[in-house]
Image (cartoon, rainbow over all chains, first blue to last red; front, side, top):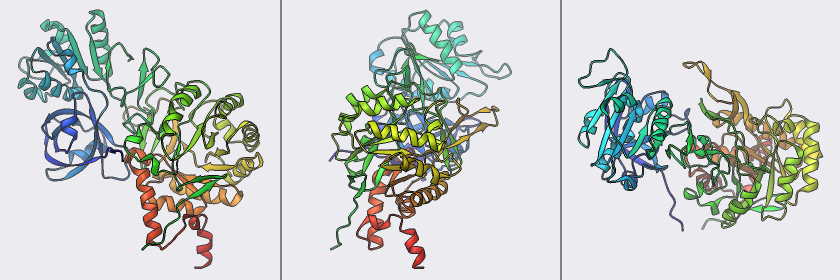
Length: 261
Length: 310
């Protein structure tokens, strides 16, 4: 008899609003947290039958069998999750997809670049790398999770909104901060909106810095079967036999040289 | 001691251990879902559409959720029949389940090439996809015109080594007419419904939700349409009918059997619960026990008889 994978019914340990529409959710899991790597994601299943599809949310932090997710409310599905309180439960599948290659880069000077809701997945990477790592976080206006990063590594942060008041913040985006602070890197891990990833892709390739980026796409199955969440690939994919890759299964973390943004 | 329940059904001479199968396009070739479902428990695995050469499909976004359903415009991305034969068929043959290959194409020649390539392969049935709304040529062009459907069915029947199932589109005025056209062309069975053509507009961005603009609607939102069409089609022809469209649980599956389907396909529900196909097999057995039934075939098209005894 094969050992089949199952969704887990996870108990909410704590939910906190950490920004205007950003929430931090700690869940008690059976195996998910202990198996999760930074950059991987989980699927969250709502209870409202009018919404069929699970929502992919990236791993933010793990502590033993406890899993932390930080997500932005962008629609009815994430709004439903934001109403969960300690003691309630929800169904979770995962961890899914590829993660950042932590062991491969250990010892090298690693730069974590997070933009907006692409910031949370960088936290577990910071926690696991601990040394030789700097986080550069880019916010639109409101700062979240910065203090969590500061427990693990030096942090540089940038805010795009000219009017935002923040001590020590660089005005502009993640790459403005990297340039202004002269942050050096042997390796880059990045997650954020596509324009940011595109700029980082160019930046890293121009300097020959190995760079892994985490991508986002609307998903249905989350396990590589439905081909709903593909992105464009630079080369023909060996499995799919076309110039595409599955964000959920082949990614969400890709080498920046593998994908067309 | 409970009497043994007979769960087996037959489609064009092919015996299935139970009437529950997967719906094409939602289950890949089974490898991914094989980690969540005991594939040996399924009546059949229906593969994702296979074309003569690799197809890249449509640009992203390909998926949009709608109330009680979803739109997809994947556009039949697949690695082509050669890779499929070398990699996916051997994978599926490790399991004790029937293999049904969904065949797609842009031209009659495309379909013929796939069907001929599969002739020597250990495949039980072919499902001919003439109803995908997401490709510009071929596909649905054959599925919305009765004459064209009859003709391509005849062409497929001439070349196919395995029995053929014609997969019908719901985007037609008279599903009975299409079912009769498939029968006239020599189809061994029909399956329905494929997705309903739909559209979603993002009111905040003021853009189409799908890069392809239109997509195929699936999920529980379409189930009543599907049940009605299965009922009408099963009354229009003497062919085995495979029913699908929004099946989420065993009771939904029973509804299709009562309407006239001899087997059912489960598609979009896999996304909500990756174990759902196996749970529907188990739920169907529980339903039979609950109502003291000993043969699942007694459900097929039985709604008419139950009306009369009312």
